[in-house]
Length: 499
Image (cartoon, one colour):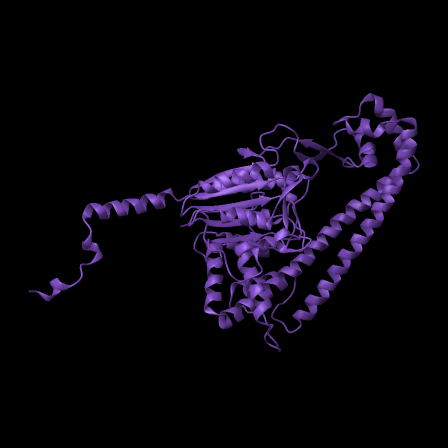
């Protein structure tokens, strides 16, 4: 007898051909059914706080995602959903010059008019009020299958927790909200095998980095299912993106740069400032889009990624380097190389011996300017309020109910108010009001410019620190820690539409 006939049969020959074909077909159909689902959730928490930029950001994100290769399904939830009522605040140029005095007096937009209107987001499935959105997400998430990929994008407002990071909030319509723990609970209901990623652009979004840890706890342990994400700002910092203007050329928020990197073009259609494709594989992953926003943006945002938060949490609890030479930027990794590039944009040489001193000098100067402009704006605000009160008191003596009538006038001043407008213009304090408000407008632009310069310096420092943390992590972290970090990084780096 041939001794080979006593060997255990191989897996290839243990099953009939029909069974093997069925297994292959089942595997193919399972992979084919796997899909990418995107939830775009946005808007303010009420009509007064639902600025046009938020609406434009959601439209921009939707168009970008729809233009990318691969198959994906978009689920849009915005403000009041399909209700025809007004849910957007927008500023438009004042076509009637007679509007200006009333606008300046009652803060309707000064040389512009603040209007409210219904949103123009196409394809909205429903509203974001919690009693509507929460059951809709629960239903949507239950319908996912193993292998599906989830991307959740939120564009709106956020507030920090009074105590405990799990209480950071993102605000929903009708002044409702989700806290970190609420979103964690929703994501925990996903079927096994569903990958979840998020892009959160609200103020104080960094608190939501806890979503990758069980029960949003302060730990290095990761959730059982795959989760990762990107946030526009730190847990203790506001973010850009709350303008009532529809002039997208002026937008400098995280959404603008993140989705521009994915789209391969700037938001106004022009070229990108640099190539976001860092690994030169012909695809731009969300991780690369995030790093593009870190380096290319002239913005007040200092963004975060969950893998970066992991390194930060690791070094806080387990490692502190000491001594000269241990704080030198590590250009052997991506963070060090980007830190050098961004420092050059700020006219700093990160590799020079004088860098730290020059960086600190610039940071002190910009911090002082930000503080000075904020104080000046508070002073101007008080001065404007005093002058307005004087003019309003005199005007409403002769024209009682003027404020109420002005609030209803629309784009033109009715004949019944034209004499009141003329009287306001002739008021001895009116020219002072105009000059002070114009000065306030100019100071606000200067403040924003210096906030952006300060944030650029903070991003240089953040990238430099990340280069150091990663360098030491790679040489001293435990294998379980390295495995957890790689899980996050692989999740962040997977291209949209990728396997």
